[in-house]
Image (tube, rainbow, N blue to C red; front, side):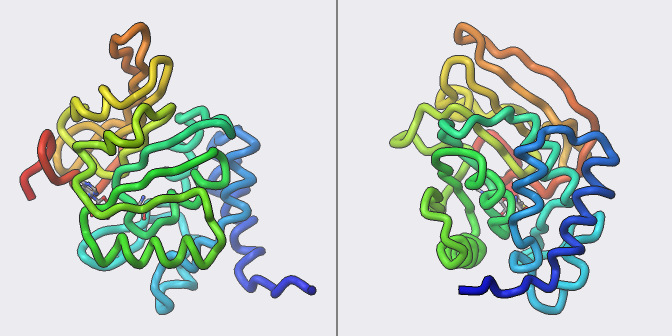
Length: 218
Ligand code: SAH
């Protein structure tokens, strides 16, 4: 059967060259995943023509889909292998979830707002991602039944590493998260080395708030 033509494919390929390759994203698997995932389907119809621009966009409920560069950078910082089991906190639109699902064995994603979680779950299923589980709940508590995780990604900004997430990280695992105040954060990579936290910082970023226990109240 002939594949339906994707009217946004050229824009997507241009996004990868101009916003990612040119700014130093080098991981070929990450670049391929962003060439493949149809980002325009993760925003409402009226915003589709802006889906490949160099910016975040609103997804309802005062939340945003992250800028393509930030998605690529965080995914690269995770240093994924196709055997990895990942926990993601903050499903939002499900776009980052799809990128992770292209690159890893299994993705468990938690979203606190039911409407966003349900929409993302339906879209990811429609796109054929069979290795993704989306759950409605409080992500700062992690997903104990599925732990340990090789990699954990938090796509909302909090004040500190929530202890349950570090506990649920496998030995040798990596946790990527924005840490700071409610407006500005530093993209942070935490590794678990012989049970201890080893931290590196990777520049400034701006995420919506991580809400819940061990994070902001609202
Ligand atoms: N990666 C998503 C980002 C969405 S914005 C995307 O690109 O579409 C961050 C999301 O984190 C929001 O949907 C918000 O509701 C969610 N969030 C904030 N705190 C959370 C928590 N404690 N547990 C689960 N989700 C949370």
